[in-house]
Length: 482
Image (cartoon, rainbow, N blue to C red; front, side):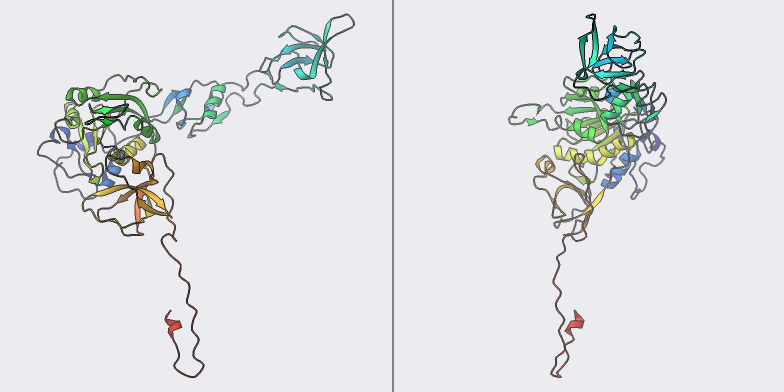
């Protein structure tokens, strides 16, 4: 959880003596106090670019902290990891067989005892090499026979290689992999499973990693079904199957998921700072206090939309109250006095994903020590009419290197997004055919490819130049005119 007022946060903006002053132009608009958001005081909606930049600038990165190895996968290491002891910290056998001292045949000794010359004792892979042992004879290279007195002795078998075992053969020496204090994993490394195993071998139980936002999901709606076919007036839950995964892709950690109805009391309880309780079947991570609460629905202004009223009751402030875009324009970003951020997503699934991409992705990136997600450009494969005053976010498919707006891309649809290669950011004045238009990648998709200079262009054959007439008539200059 953030411990200090974030950059550009409501706490800092509260000192502005003229929150209703002149239009601030291209910069972020001042936030609206939550208690007045539903009254007569209304501020213009942020533009898409303003909202995106403001959501990034209003948060400070969460400090680094140690986490158990099992929770460190995919995290960024915040300090060097060194070996706490020699690796391995004792000499061990690399084979099943016998520890031996000198040349054979060998008299058998008890396991673990010091071996005198021409003695051997059984050993298994990874077993501690006993004092006096010089090598390990593989089990398939040795055989137990009887000497002249009928006592058991170990001899090399016909499967043994010439000269086997050589001195030091099949013995893993102490510190063979690393010595105590040796650098194993550098600060800034993105930890993979092998890194975690290496840290465990080095003696670590926890590793320090850069902070990530712990996210609580609050999924609302009494009419929402988690399974089965919905009847009239009912809808299937589209957020439960996807939202925690998207949060993870955007750099957050989903620690809790709540499902509530539409009453104000339920909303208020869900936003209060309570001890997290992981629902059955929820994410298998440690229960951490939330840095961000993401809600679905309740961002409109009807009698069942209680987000703004709940934020006001908790003495919070609305940092963003509406964005001049579609779909997703009623998105809300708020901050509570304890430092938690509230992201209010619209109830329609595509609108919610566009709002999450606009304010959720930048906020989670800033809290997680990452840069603002990039916006690239792609050539547009169709003419898109103007929609004055609003930026439109359109899922698109790449067709011959050009972005074609996807079908089935209404606010309540998911089919177009499921098949999309990215999202177009269409400016209010529209886009001409072939014009470069801003676009961003989907959290689960590849980066936006660089535009192909040849896209949309067709090659025409050059016309052979005409030769001047040979009969002394007028000269044909058409070749010079192209």
